[in-house]
Amino acid sequence: MEDGVDFDPGVAADVLSDVINQAGGLIVGAHGINVDANDIARQRVRNGGVIRGNSGAAVFLGAGRDIVVVDEGGIFDGLVDLGADNDVLRIVGMQPDPIIGGATAFFDGGAGVNVLTFDSVALTDLISFATFKSGYELGWRNADASESLLRFVNFDLFDFTNGRVTFDQLVAAVPLPAAIWLFGGAIGLFAAARRGARRAA
Ligand SMILES: [Ca+2]
Ligand SMILES: [Ca+2]
Image (cartoon, rainbow, N blue to C red; front, side):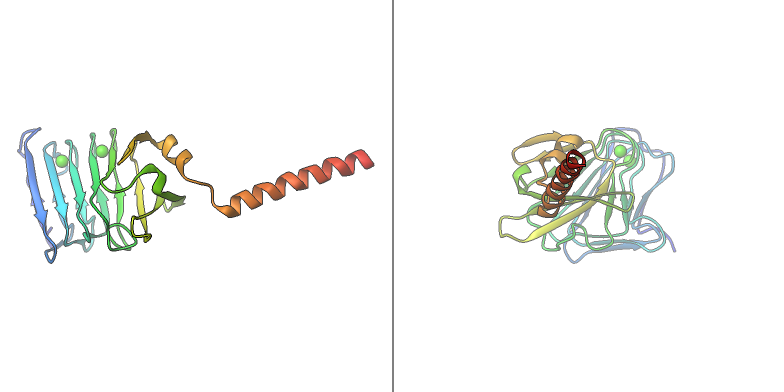
């Protein structure tokens, strides 16, 4: 099976090509959207429909400063690999699916300094952070109190509605879940009890 959209080599660096898949649209193939292995051109993929890779990535954009925009309700069935160089992943608006891009979506910024941009999420909306497969799963609460999850790896800078943070600042901004506070508190009590026991001995 061929790729849904296949960019051929030979396009110069800095030339930007757009793929816009609107709600109701379907791009499907071995890779949903693919570039040549030697690609250095820029691609911008905006998806409010479905992009599916049946045997490869849903989206592979290779080198060049590429952009992926997840419109409200956009589904990426498979890996979204932005490839080498400094890329941007942008999450638009309020997403109806609790997992951004759908249950199989996973966003890999690849090499370079990659930026993840949230149009409608503030740093203070974050509620969870965990490892997920080879990357991470970030959770936040939306304005309507629904919750969203994003699964990603290899992003370095994170733009929220109230500012930009590094990966370490992102992790530090997520409130610790109650279970960790309780667990940490229990360890503290246990250590105190052991110290007490040693003194008594
Ligand atoms: Ca590219
Ligand atoms: Ca990259």
